[in-house]
Image: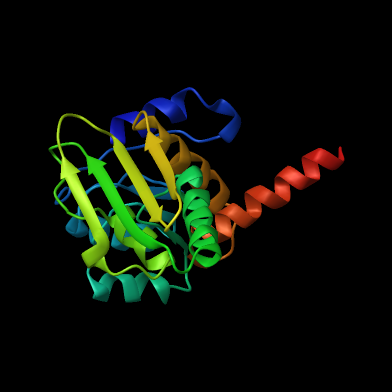
Amino acid sequence: MGKAIARIIKHSPELELEVTAGREPGQNTDAPADVVIDFSSPQGAQEAFELAKELKAACVIGTTNLPERLLFQIQEEHKIPVFYAPNVSLSVYFFGQLLKKASQMFPHYERNLHEIHHVHKKDAPSGTAKKLAEEIGLPLSQVSYERFGEVVGTHILTLSGPYDKLVLKHEALNRDLFADSAVHIAAWLLKQPAGFYTMQDYAAAVLKSSKKDLKL
């Protein structure tokens, strides 16, 4: 993800970003920065958050399974702008909204959420699956998962009724989906006042900007 983010920043001059340093969990860096982006581990996310505060920089965290203590710290932050989401993809966010609407429209249908990821994925179910399940009030007992190959990430909600079956699916084709989203979120976050931000905030900003472009 770090390499993908650096590559996308290099090829997106319109965002006015550049990479000043790369780091692994446990590594220190004194390179100046206006925004810190983390996709590493819970430990790495904690270090990235502390580094951002030290630099008075914005902070984007896309790492999953953060401990409750760190989540609380992020949500209570008021000195720097900090963004957190277990999945930074805008399309995944809208997929979640679609699942929520479908669940509301078909409350009596049997629901099952299934996710597929590559064999290197450490958490199961994934942070994204847990978030989607939370969005529609689905118990984790009704979330299944598979790990094989190099699958980037697929999430499928099946709604089964007495006369039909509704299948809603999101499939990530390339990890650049998340890297590109993270870079755009970072560029947006730099312009926001200090505080805590989520995909809901970013999606609202994108929608507002899209409406403005349509008027033009």
